[in-house]
Amino acid sequence: MKPALLIIDMQKGLLTDPRLQSELSVASEYINAVADLFRDTGRPVVVVQDTEMGEHSPGFEVTPEIRLDDSDLRISKEWNNAFWKTDLEQLLRDKETDFVVVCGFAAEHCVTFTFNGARERGFGAAILQKGILGEHPDAVSGVYRDRSLISYAVIHALLKNQ
Image (cartoon, rainbow, N blue to C red; front, side, top):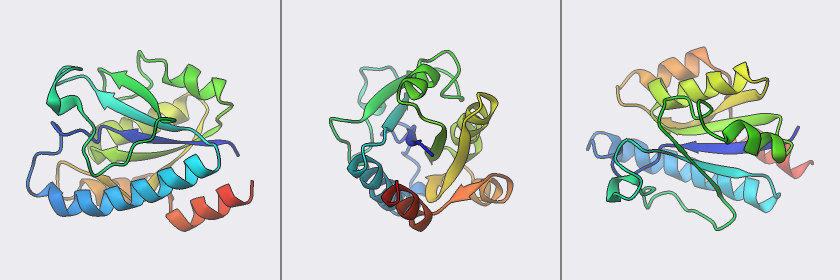
C-alpha cells in the first residue's frame, strides 16, 4: 500500500464556530500525529484548501492548530470534492499513491465528498478516526457509521512496516 494523507479545509475562516473549538483541539492532535508519521516515512501529506473566502484572505490560511511542513503538497479547490476540477488525482498518481486517508473539515460535506471522489477514481480510502470535525453535532458519528475508518495505531503499523 502506498498511502497519502489528505487534510481537508482546516482553515481559519471555516472553523469560527465556538462549538468547534474542543473538537478542533482533538482533531488537530490526531491530524498532526498522523501527518508526522506520513512525513517520517516519505509519504505525501496534501493540504487541501477551499477558495470560498478568497485565496489571499486571512480566512484562507490553515488554522494554526495544524502543523505544516515545507514538504506538504497544496491543492486549492472550489468544490466539495477535492478531486473535482483540481490536479489532486494526477498529483497522487505521480506519487504512486493507491490509498488515501481523509481528515479535516467538514465531515458531512468536503470530507465525505472527497472520500467518495477517491473511491470513484479507484483509490482505496478511509476516514481518520478522531481526525474530522462537522458543522452539525451528529455529522461525525454519521460519517463514522457510514464510511471506512482507520485509526492512528493502524496507520502507525502500516507505515512503519513498509
